[in-house]
Amino acid sequence: LVVWVRMQWNDPRLRWDPAEFGNLTKAYFWVQDGIGGGEVSEVWTPDIYLWNQEESMDKTLADAYAAASPNGDVYWSRPGLIKATCKFRGLGSFPFDRLGCELEFGSWAYSGLYIRPVKMGDGFSIGGSETAGQSFAEFSLVDVFVHEYVYPPFPAAPEEDWPVLIYEISCQRASKPYVRGHLLLSVMLNFCGFATLWIPPHVGERMGLAITTLLASVASELTVSEQLPNAEEVNWFVIFSLISMLFQVAIVFQSTVVIYFYYFTGSSLKPVYIKWMEDRWQTYRKGKKSPDETEIGRSTQHNNDAGNGSISDTNHTVRAGTKTKTNSNDSTNDDNKDNNKNTENDDKSIRIENVHVDHHHCDFEGSLRHLRLDAEGFKDEQAKINNLRWQRISRRVDDLSRLLFPTLYIIFLAVIIAEAGNT
Image (cartoon, rainbow, N blue to C red; front, side, top):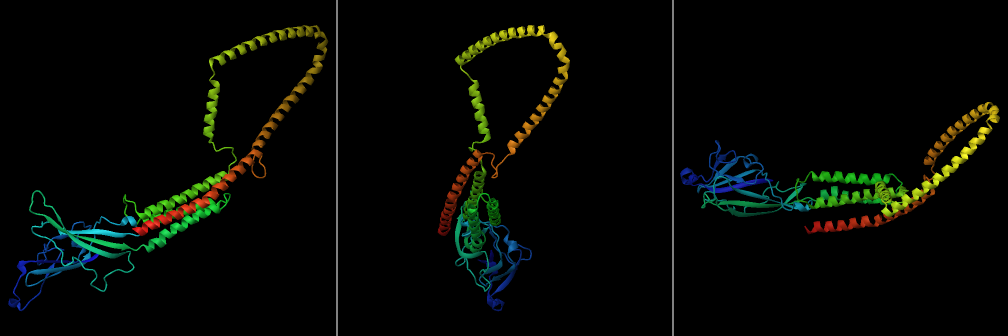
């Protein structure tokens, strides 16, 4: 803040009679180091400091002469800068805020018993030179208000209070650069994101456009955030950026869902792990039988074992008779053994060969069945029917989103802009 700090006080030690000094009505004394306590300073000056200073006024204000009058009045004016640590007011409406800051001036070493700062006239003045004011600046001075405040005395010195002067300064921020460079850009990027709702799901640029608009909004928001203090308080711009970005995230999510439905061929959206858990549960339910069912199962198994035993005995008898008959004809078949031996070996080789060839042929056919797709990329007719059903759902989601997203965003813009106008 560019200021002229002016102070006036009365020092009885600087009184004189103008008649005794050649009608001298004004005397100038050099003051250095910002206070009268410096080695080069010629007169005493009150130690009035900015209590909430970021940098001492001794360094930010220029050294200057103090003008003394015959009655002992001293007038001291210094140009320079004031750097204060402000407890900002109005920043919640950024970038349409009227920023407020309080400057607290008072004596640091002397209580009100010795130095009591009071307003000189109105306590302030604005302008006064041709170069005063602002042009092409981010902030413009709107109002200044000054009042006196007295801190109560310490218990150790109950008769000494601590008076100060508090200046309340209000500055209006130039909001048009933020409106042009960030707010309108964010609105246009959101509507570009909404345009993806009219792009068919099978076009790859749909997801690319949605992600690009989201990244551009993030970059714009980061640029503005660098100009704001890192604080817990939430301002108007943060709310606007956050909700606008949520709309763009929702567009990316909606495009993902629509594209997934468009290419989906399953019968249901149930995840694989849910199906696996259901199968395991059904297996567990089937394996857990009641005692009555277990007894019935044992009786049935016993009867089956008995029947199988009878059949085995009968077969044994039949095989025995067949063996007897074969033994009686051994002499007849001995002559044919040598003739049939080579033929059997040839047949066996052929059969083994055929088995290997057939087995290899079956594996090849099975692998082809897994790879066999029709002209539209479906394995079977059921997958095609399922895909047509999911494509209808994706079209319905798009139709609903084309109406829902822009409408909600326009309502949000109306509410947030009305709130900015009220502040």
